[in-house]
Image (cartoon, rainbow, N blue to C red; front, side, top):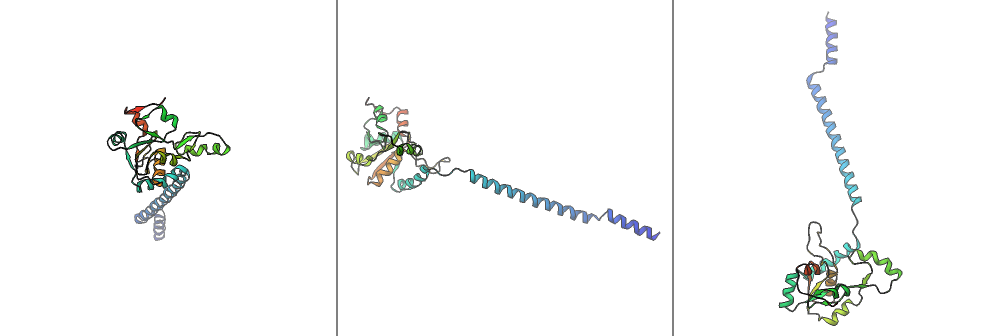
Length: 226
């Protein structure tokens, strides 16, 4: 009888372990699953980071170029003004609006009293080199079929003294102000021109934010040479 009881007890213990052992095993299994899930989540996160880094677009030449120009403009205290402020400065403080758009656009319509020195001009003679450069100009928001005006500074110097009060303007204007989408602002023809002016000794250079587009939009004084 005793042997039978012993055998029965052994079988009972084999198939019915104490509750504390079951609890320990269950806890161990849960911890193992949690650790495995964490490792899997971590691996997925690292994979996504690598994928996002690979998909992130490289900086364009214009963006790299702007990273050089913008600090210089800020250091030289080139101030941005809106069109109404520009008109006031023109009327009350003898500021000159320097319109750097192509000559054809300037003649079509421009702020009254503005002078024109185009920073980019229509390409006069197409060469293989000119054709190859067309894509590069797109980075600067410059239309195809234009090239840098090598006589820009020389032409400005023939019209404006180094201490002249200048407001540089182009079509859109660009901005030096950071925004959520543009943390370093946005380059434009007028800002490129302002950069060249301050590098060449001009000391009173302002920039028309919003550009000639906003000037026309608010119906401020304009003239045409057509």
